[in-house]
Image 1: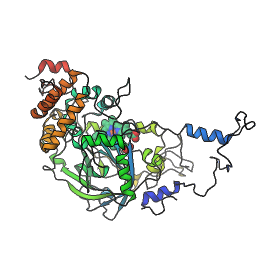
Image 2: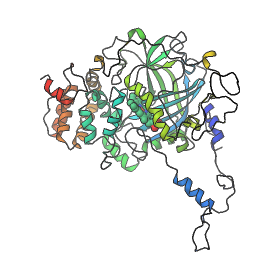
Image 3: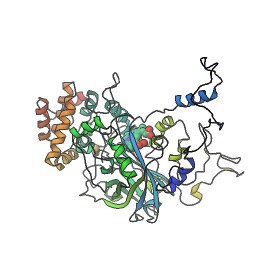
Image 4: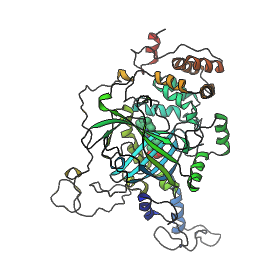
Length: 537
Ligand code: HEM
């Protein structure tokens, strides 16, 4: 195999059975027939027509014709690597998850970093959020921590995700701009979406221009739950802390690099790993007892809020090391399928409405991106533990299920696995109490859209503040509809007067009165007209 000499773990050893090098081997057709010549098609005379019977030509071209699959609808551009996760200290008090309690276990991981908006071929250094997705191949099944390099998100409810992405992607009539948020549709949406204020501060900051993927933080964003052996729940926020520190490039450097080497981040990650400078992150957790759920001036279920580290310190509990490049970009980095719903016993969800919607979206999109219901059998997606269940058939089924039965209950045996509940280690959902009316509403506790945006701006050094002013001026300067610029200035004035004033000056505009949503009695997503009539002047 091609991985001789590379660092191995349980997952890469398992992948080895699929690795093919072709070195010193005879060329074959897909049917295993040896091929003498794949450079000349079969013709009726050397100047004659090509013959339909040429199965060597047909097969070569047919396979080529079908090489492309859809790129991811978001996070299309990415770079991946294999590695391991080593726990420092057991979290047994909080969770029963084996990989978070057994300090002797070395858990294989595959990580994919990405930009969000650009297409597969876009530049690494676009101003954008970076995806930070980690698949842990644990002894209890796969756990995916599908996070970003920013701790909050643009919207509070997954039902708005298609709107957000339609706004940020290239405009539909001319596919411009590629991999950039500097255009009317994006700022139109943002200026009407005050809940984005906090995230916009992060995206306009240096955090959106990482120096290297090795120098970014990662965040699970949502509040999750840890469940211990007794069934007790604690809230948890996940963090990745890079041991190389957090570093960014300046905007003019980013633009320069994008022109000279659009693969800058991908190359940097690849070369660091090839040269043995293995990137490392510590896994951090902020743990909050269930009883403290309502203790904070924000809602733990609101993904536009972070839990300040001064309030709840981040405990560093283990280390992720990336130590091996993929053998094949398509087979591994492109075909890997992360899903926030891939959890193991001891980790559970909360009612964060963004999280809840994501639980639907990932499998749904992967069903089309990866061609049907068996994509969990693709080598990079297989868990390191065996899979036995009563699922059968579907396009591209690899597993050959023997035996007579594929249903439960049955008395005939012969192929039907036990339900884990009868044995140990099965997943049990946390028995959260629910007593509520079915409503299409958002909680009052999600209404403060500006305090943490202001907190973020105030936390920045003067040069960092200048970068935010410059970024907003550059981006809004590309917006052609003046009313959108004006509306954004209104939003900025709710974050920080100084910020709004400086951006307004650079745009040659006056800071306008905010159009929304200072009056907290009005829902943040009410139609603009409703705001305009009730603005607190
Ligand atoms: C892909 C993170 C919100 C839908 C991704 C990826 C990451 C990510 C890291 C790339 C995975 C990879 O490398 O293959 C996040 C974070 C979110 C968020 C941190 C908010 C906190 C959402 C929401 C939805 C969504 C709200 C939909 C309701 C998708 C889809 C993909 C994706 C469809 C493509 C998956 C694929 O084709 O494999 N997301 N996302 N995301 N995300 Fe999200």
